[in-house]
Length: 443
Image 1 (cartoon, rainbow, N blue to C red):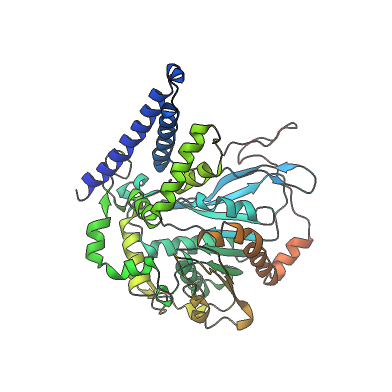
Image 2: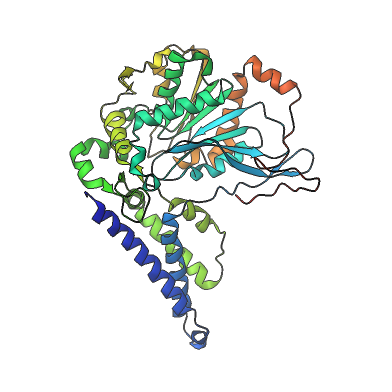
C-alpha cells in the first residue's frame, strides 16, 4: 500500500525518540549519581524529560481544560464539554456553563483543520465564555477514522458547516479562524440560497486565505511551486496498521509538524535548550509557559488526503473562492447570494501565514451585503496566532468582535436578553440532580 512504510517509519522514529528520552531520564535520575560533583547527570535527566514529553505529546489529543467561569453571584460555574451534533469526521461540541442562564450571544467557532486539534482555540473559547454561549467544530484525527466511512474533502467540510449552522439556527454568530474562512463563506452562501431562515446572524472571518493571491506568503509560494502530482507523491501516505484508519490516505500530522518547526527552527531550538537548562537548574515547572505552549503545538492530527489536496488545488491554485467559482456537488455556490448576514474580517499586520489582504477580500465578494453591514479590522504588529488567541485578541480584537455581534443582533436576541430564561441544573446530560451536587467534571 502506497506510503504505509513511510508512515510507520515516522511513527517508529517518534516512538524511538520517546523511548530514548524516557530511558535517559530514568538512567540519569539514579540517586547514586547525586554524589558526582558534576551537573552532567542533572542536564541529561532534564534533556530526557523534555524529549520524552515532547515526542509523547505528538500522538495525544489535548484536553480542553476550560477553567470555571466566575459568575456575578460570586460562584464559579463549571464548564462541561458536550457533543451537540456528532458526525464521522467531526463533531459540533458545546461548552455548557453549569447553572447559568442562556446568553444573548451564541457563537459558533469554526476551528481550522490544518494539522492541529480544535483545542488550539482553548484560549479563544475561554475568553468568549463569560459573555457568550460557545460551540466549536471539533474535527477528528483522520488516522482514527476507518476507510469504510468514505472520503472527506473540502466539499464535505462545507456541507458539515452547513449542517452545523442549520442546527444552531439563525441567531448564531459564526467566527471562522484561518483555514476555514473561505469555506465558512461558501457555507453561508449555500444557506442564503437554499435555506435563508437558517443563515447565521453574523460571520466573522479571522486571518483566512479567501484570496491567497492578494498577498504572497511562504505558504502561497509553496502551493504555487508544487504541482499536484509532486504534492501527492511527496506528502500523502497511508495510515499504518496501528490505528483504526489503517489504509486511509492522509497528509500526516507529523509531516505537517516538521514543516511548522522548519519555518522557525532556530526559535524552537532555543526554546527547547532553555527548557532543558531551566529543568536542570530546578526553575522549570509542569505548567510553565514552555509546556503549556508545546503540549498544544506538538499535538498534531492527520488530514484526509482528499481534503489536503483539494484545499491546495481549489483554494490556493484555482482560487475558486476568490473568483466566486466554487461548486459543491456540481452546483455553483454564489457568494453574492449572501445579503442578510453581517460580515467582518480581521487581519494581523505581521501575519506570515495569511497576510493582510487575503481575508479582507471576502468583503468585495459579498456583493449582496450592504456596506453598512460590512466591517474590517487590521491589527498592527499582530502575528497569525495573536489575532485569535494572543494578547492582540484579548485586548483589542475580542471587544471589537463582541461589539460587532451586538450591533447586528436581531429582535429575537433582544427578546431573549430581556426575558427570563431557564437556569441550567449544573448536571451532565442524563445525570440526576442532587441537593448537594457540586457540578464537578473532569474534562
